[in-house]
Structures are given as structure tokens and as C-alpha cells.
Image (cartoon, rainbow, N blue to C red):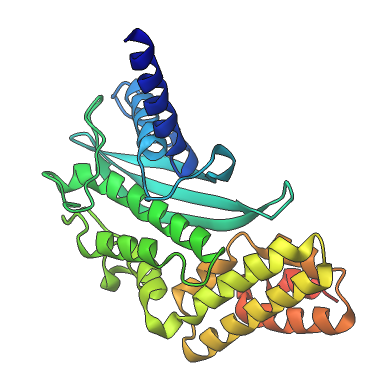
Length: 306
């Protein structure tokens, strides 16, 4: 009888282990800009709680092996103590995706969200319910809503990079969070009229059929580009040129869209390395497209892709 119970426990343990969570997140809370009478130990407790929230929650129905977990980081910089355990700041979100059969990680997301406000008392439960995003107190619910939003966006981009439209379900989940987001006069970042570049517009662009070619572009960049580059550089560059052609079509029809700026953040140096040793035709085409699409890095491309 004892052996049967032991075997059953082992089976349950292994089964639960096989459903390993999808992301491996590092989260840090920075408070150097805040002068507050509150014991800053509260922020260490918050950091631990949010890290556990990100890494222990099951975000998909798929099974991820430890080596397949998506590497990402969240840096929360608290800039203002607004009183009443309410804090205001910004969040930097980064994620990467490994290139097939290499140790190289290609940037997947690199974005700074300047609209982070939340309420936190030490040891309060850190929870998120996608069916009730508002929660009992919008300011309490806002931080986990923001984190859940970005986790779903990361999953969407990652899945899209392996199969065309593979990330649709996660982009839709992010859009649902936007549409049911916590609402109070202190909270910003969820509404279309507040800014042209915020959580609303990123999710809107990824769910809007006007931007459907984005999904083809992501697949071309990673699966047909990054994943083959280290075995066949010319083929990899061709895949990335195809991606840039897709993005150029989108940009022509939808100038100044948020998604275009978003996709190129953190990509400049990688693109320069990819095309710096390209043949003259590929290098010329890449430079033409990149200087048109990624205005922020125009001088970098003009200098390095001569």
C-alpha cells in the first residue's frame, strides 16, 4: 500500500512538473528616486511577490520544457509616493527569443511604459482574474493587470515568431484586458485618447486587420530570418528583407503607427550586424528600408551600412 501511494505521489509530481510555466521572468523594483517615510522593505516584499506571480502562474495551456521558457525582465521604477500606499512610476519590459540551434538571443520586446500607478500594502495578496480585471479596488488591480497585459503581449510575439498568427489568442487576451482595465482618475495608459503610444494602441494594432501583415513580418524575421541566419546567412538576410518589405507595406498604408516604432526598439544593433556583411544589393535594400522605417536609428544605418 505504501509503495502504491509513493508511486502515485511521484506520478503527480512529475505530471505537475511537465506543466512548467511558460516564462522565466526577472523583476526588479527600483526606489532610488523616492523619498518616503515608508519602510522600503515593503518594496522588497513587493518585488518577491510579483516575481512569484509572474513565474508561478500558468499563462497558456501548452507544456513548456525548462529550456523553452521565454526569458523576460520587468523593471519597475517608482518615482513618486502619492500617499495612501499609492505609488507612481514607469515599467521597462524586455523579452528575448533564442535563435534556433544557437546560444544567441534575439530581442523580442524592449518597451518603456511611463503610465504605471498602483496601490500596495505589504503582504497584500497579488492576484489577477482575467474575467474580473477591475478587482475590488482599481488601484490595487492595476499593477497585476499591466503585468498580465505584457505577459500576454510577450506570448503573442513569441508564438507569432514560430507560426503565422500563432499569437492571436494572446493578443486577444491583452486586448480583453485593455477593454476591461481598471479605471480611476489616477490610472492612465489604457485609453485611446490619452496618448498615441500606450497599451491601448499596441494591443489595438496587433488585433486590427489593417495590420495583418505584422504577423507575416514577425514570422519572416524570426523563423525565416534569425533561425536560419547562422547556418545560411544569405537565406537569413532574405527572410529579414521580406520582413522589412511587409513592414514597409504596413507603414505606407498606416504611417506613424505605434507598432512600427515598437518593433524596432532594441533592434538597431542586431540589424546592423546582420546586414553589415551582406552583398551590395542586400545591403542597399536593407539600408533603404531601415532608414525609412526606423527613423530613430537613421544615422546608425547610414554610418554602418555604407
